[in-house]
Image 1 (tube, rainbow, N blue to C red):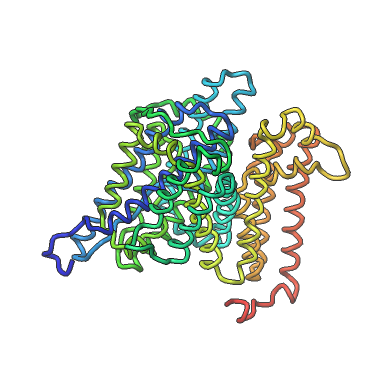
Image 2 (image 1 turned 180 degrees about the horizontal axis):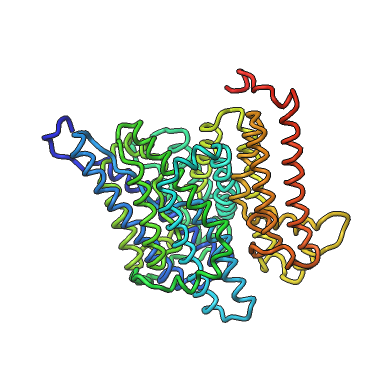
Length: 534
């Protein structure tokens, strides 16, 4: 568009490339949400497809429609060619909530004697309630996001997200890829070739589409011969799980059990707000000057709507608006994606596609997302903070180990309980692993912030983060000694578990005092050198 009188060409060929990229991103997240719950936790599939998917997809429809409208409005105002802001399901929190909220809630209800379907319904209510809480947090922090961004060092914010990329988004899909090596690695290779190396395929065929198409065809061609690895299940039945995203107060039934997941819900909400600020800024640099608060409020309302309508995954503006702009996308790709995903959740063809395409074929898309998140954390932070970014990885790794150890299909419940209380010269290794993993996002943010401030010689600020860690660990907000990650008053605990809050909190508090004392020494007052600031 060269002038204000020209009509905005909102749909061009580049929108098809953008549509395939954004649509498959959303399908990949839905596929892993379903796969984790069905295969890792034995969740009833029909509850996922007919109750969770419709509301989740409706949130995407709402958000993408609003972002499409924003593009039209900005184009009319600026007289320029505008690319809409991409919105979709947030990968880190969707996988995280499946692994640490929905799945554990389902197993906990079953362990209490509840029937499988009743346990699944309660877990769904908990997921809805968690979404509503995240939505409320996002609405509040859409007005405070820039303040949080200024207060917490980037190493804490991005390092915690990068840890999720490493352990939850990267490693889990990597196992799926090598579970079917031929189709998985070929799809991964095409993703790396096009998206990481940036090399165009012949005739500029979209890389994501090619990777999914080739991998799926190989799966169904080679599957009957047993060459793909694993068990070939054949094409899924043409069952369309119809479900309307009708607003319901069912989330109220999950509020109380969802409260213990607040240490997970709040950081996930804050991270997408901060991410939304960064994404809006990158769009502004690329030439599309969207209002940050409008972008953030849209994703917050979309998440709230999804939660009230049965959704269990939050929406977020995607990183990479300039990339969609470079591929020639306008506003058509967000409109197509929103309508395709939204109606697919209602009429059930999204769940059919999720079952049709093997996870090993979709997994490489998540590998790319994981690599992008991790590399961005190191590139966006000052080089001297690389230590802090890496330090923030560990709590998420501990959480992944705790999830595996707590899975009764891997470690029987009785044996797991024995490992938690095994006496020894130090605290039981499994108990410590569980404690380190509980509240992993908050822990990672605070660890990264503590070390970044220490590196910058801001010793009092560093000690403050240690004091917060001490307070949070004392009440189980982080480092909960409970396998379910519940918050508590430590004096109500018993056995070895009671030692966790007292010893962890005391350790953080003593270290905070040591750092404060060192801040008064000559060496502690030395400013960071000019070369180290680079």
